[in-house]
Image (cartoon, rainbow over all chains, first blue to last red; front, side, top):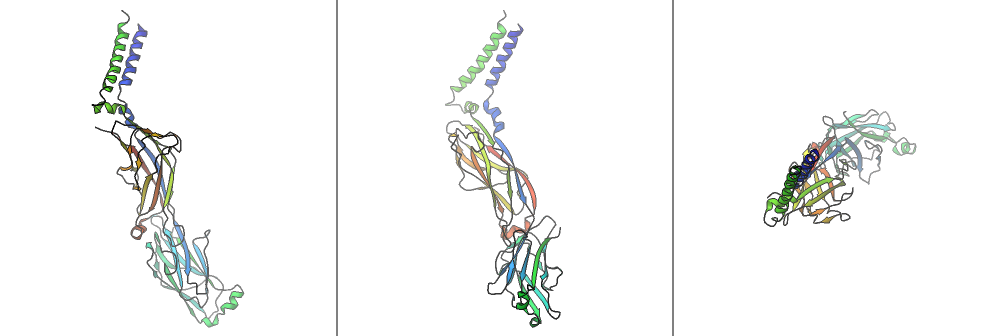
Length: 193
Length: 187
């Protein structure tokens, strides 16, 4: 008796299973979810663009993309542009400093640099130029409040740099250059964090 | 008697089978019956999808980033003259400000597939919270079950209209969920 009852139950269950509309339970599987991770790392990249007519050397390294060094002479003039790309963490900004990183100036020679507004060929929160500073060995802010932005790459993009020498005749560039004592200025982009 | 219990169970089972068979003979005219037989199964190869935005050089904007690791696999049976779509939407989280995320599918791989596998949309769709068609005209088919079987999906992430929005981009990690749906067929 018991076996027959069990058999009855099994047959009934099997029957019900087959009868169950297949669309009814398969529809539960007709979506698939996937996780997606999007990351935006903070970035600060800086470089020069220079007019080829000037006697200027500059360096950019992928290993140290947040600073560049430019060797300058009294003839460097105003044909240097500072290009940068920046992406900031919430609440942070980047800023750019400048300092004389190589060579020394005679006592009666001062070297100033004027930083212009961004030329407007990029986009985003480009920085605010300080205007003019007298360069020294100590890094001084020249552009501040840089948010997420890019200036574009090349001459006439980014901020134009104009070097002004006082008493340049006291500075013998070629002699210093041959002695490895040429004046070099390093520009560094740094986060406020 | 010892048999009635068994007999009645078998009769019930036979009846249920016959209802199914009965209804099957009505397929030509009864859509209700047709839905019983159609099915739609979808899954992915569960490949992790990660994308990163970064400028390639000083002065340049963040370059777009693409990922084509994910494959979507399906099995589908449809009623005659009917078809399904695969749609996609963002079901969790949101795309970071100042950026947009697109998705486009390759045609289904041919190695282990069969049937009418449908046609991917010709241009990428921009993902948001609303389902958008990714592949249409899917009829009865299967894609195969291997890791690289099915529809290869290409996600592309890029700054959105950077000349206006670029300052909105903020460094961070953003986790979002994308839901693929193989659409049901309702009558």
